[in-house]
Amino acid sequence: MLIGNGWDLHKHSALKPMYLAGLEFDEEGFEGYSDGDIILHALCDALLGSVGKKDLGHYFPSKQPTEKGIRSTVMLEKVLEIIDYDKLKVRNVDITVISQRISISEKRENLEESISKLLNIEDSKVNIKGKTADFLGLIGDKKASASLVTILLENA
Image (cartoon, rainbow, N blue to C red; front, side, top):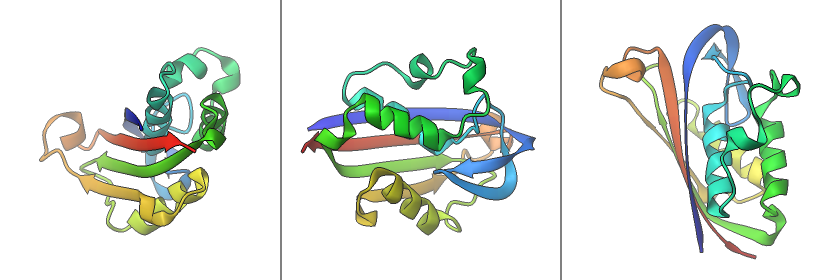
């Protein structure tokens, strides 16, 4: 069994659309060199960590002009190649979005379906939860949102 853990946080920005799990929402997005998808960034780090690879920033440095504005779905595709994903089997993906601003309950089904399609797994293997920060810190002040991802894999 292989276990990976990933985390990401971005400040909100009215200048960009919101991307979560590869889907675009008509809400205020996130600052970032890429599209700022906090779910996919945390998922990429969890996948990389599960096989002992370096973090996402190592493979997609924000100082590279070619990476500016990159979609996180493209990053995920490259990460799946890096970790030899076709030789692995996902048992479970557990995702927590921490935000005072984003309502996960309204988006949960679409987000879980998107993750299952991106990873080519059954919907039942993906779980997404929403939490708040009880109005504490940057997240509680609605200035930022974060995502935590834990993934359990095994060799295929």
